[in-house]
Length: 230
Length: 230
Image (cartoon, rainbow over all chains, first blue to last red; front, side):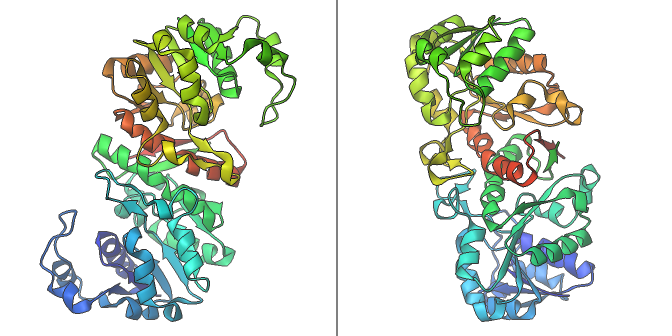
């Protein structure tokens, strides 16, 4: 399948390499291709510049947000939450309409120091996923995988024999069913995928970040996930 | 041990009966004892009036907030989050100072319909537990158990052989150590109690409620908890 990835950060890179390994064709989208390839700075987490990663992953296409959105039969949003709606606007509703947009972004607010809190305009009485769905009514937004470290998103078997939980939310039942099939490619088992209902349920899954960040801080280990035990 | 319980709702009742069964002496505190015993209405969840429950649990003392706080060597806050600081003010700093206050309350905001969201004044860039700690600097506030259904708080073995997670936060290491001992009386195992750090970590544990409420809504089962898998 052709998959467009909106965003070029470490989450996008993790998806890109894993999806190519699974046999998919991938195009990553960025605001300005020439600038992205010229950048020499490490990112905020100390990762190498994009160009160094891309040089080692030549089979992954790079284009503008609009080109990546047009390329993908399925499109992923892995931008920073504060920038998501702007990036998707540049990607263009005409390139996204009718498609599934898997929203993996989190509306983190770094303005109050670390650990980040949530952006008030995208949390509590709303969510980033809901605001994306409102801004792009012709797109089938499915929220999933945002509640864990990227390495686990694409390889749940890394810990606990894969027996932990991925949440899924969205208004379109068929789109959720197709995203569940896509999750199975990464190793997610049906029993570990919990459908929380419509896109407003993203108010719950995006609110996982504050506890996630505190556990990460206390344990110094990001390779954990939550399992719903009942 | 003598334990004061600030609040008389279903969470308080669950603690009271379990603590008495474990051999503790319990006094529950309410705003107005005569009114509480005269009330004939069911609560918002359809539970019977307090007097009916109390008639079947005569060994549990009932007093004012202040009397319950004075009675307890350990004090629990199980009031509704919106009312907690007011109830604790009526309980009196003089009756609470130097003691451990186990804060189990959640700052739920029912003003936007169901499921509730979080009260902005007690969430995201702060938390109810932090605001209680600020208002009562002479009290050792320990936040724990607020992330699950009351039945599991006092009996974790009900599901998954008790192998799921209780979080604990607070500024006083000795107070947290004593609360961990108290949690063991309910059946919590050390390996399942995760210390997240100081009281600001309650921003994380109180933010569990939005996902908790969505899972409850989707599964129609409150007898679940999160396990941190790593």
